[in-house]
Every structure is written in C-alpha cells, then in structure tokens.
Length: 232
Image 1 (cartoon, rainbow, N blue to C red):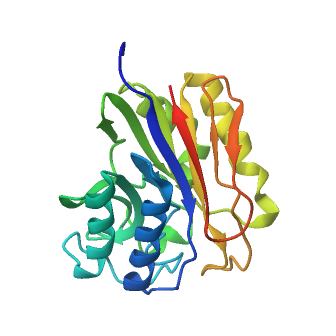
Image 2 (image 1 turned 90 degrees about the vertical axis):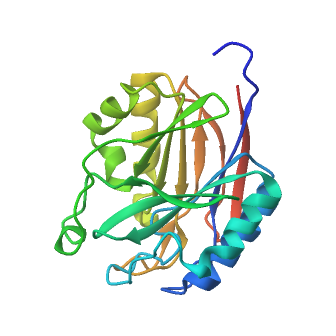
C-alpha cells in the first residue's frame, strides 16, 4: 500500500511464571510499555507457560486487565499466547478495547493433540493498513500454513514460538524459508527461560527477518529481552 506509515513492531520474550496468568499479564504489560511499538508479539502460551494442563484463559478474564490498560495507554496491539475455550492453543489480540481470540493453532504437536484441537483456518489482522498473518510454533514448519496465510494477502508473518536451546536454529531455517517463498517480513517471538513440557532451557533469540530473508535484528537468550523494528 502506498503512503502507509512504517509499522513499529516488537518481539518480546518475557519471564513467565507457570500458570500464573495475573503475574504474566503484568509482565506483558511492562513489555508493552517498554516496547513503544504499535504491535508487540509474545511467544506461544506466553500467559500460562507451556503447561498443557493449564486452565483456559477467558477473553473477559479480569487478570488480563493490566495488559489491556497498557495497550490503552500506548495504543498497542499485543499478541499474547494462551489456551482458550474449545481447547485450542491461541493468539489473543489485546487492545485498549479488550481481548479477542485472533487465531487458533492449526498444526499441533503429538503431546498437544492429547488435549487440544487444531484450529481450522489461517488468520490475518489489519493494522494501520498492514496485513499481519498469525502463526504458532509448529505452524511455521508447515509450508502449507504459510502458503494459505500468504494467500490472504499479508505483509508480515508473525509467530509465537517455543524451541529448546538445542534447536535454536529451527526458527532461523523456517523464517528464511517463509520470507524467501512469500517475500514478507517474518517476526518470531521465542520463549526464553524454562517452562513445562521438558523445556528446561528454551531458546530465546526472538528475531525479525526482512522480505529479503535477512535478519533485521535478534534478542539474546535471556527472559525479559525485546527487539523493536520499524517495518517499511
């Protein structure tokens, strides 16, 4: 789109307290304020941790109020991860107006499938004229997911992910493939620290890649880090 303004985009990897939605929402809120961005992307299941038996997080959950307030103050859209009604792993879209379920993970891991059900459709959000396609972790490794999402018309492919430190290069490989195939920005917010499911050391290293498949920037491996970018 001609004459649209650059999109201020951030990827964040906050410290996560297992199953403590209230504490994690406050940490997310602090990240939103620190990011000074229009869109702030968080990792898979960022509000609960990768705790596959964690209760669902309703969109009207009062524990999310600090995050809603931070988005209201900054004008941000936060894309946070949580289990939601219907037994889906989801992306919650949080603004100053409230919370909605924006996307449900389509490609589940084997262990995830014991509890969760796959979503049935890709999703794209329009943010100030920018088309942001959504993904969660394993989705990024399925070429058909990126293709179906890109077919809806996107400028950015945004994914919350969780990888172990020993698999830190997986996100790079997938992002390079997606950017090369579809000529879009790719943003991945990657879990840092430890969480459930045997992830005693998550990879961190959240990053943003340009449509030329070049790394725009990357965080380190520690919880609490974030990266800002101006997409144009």
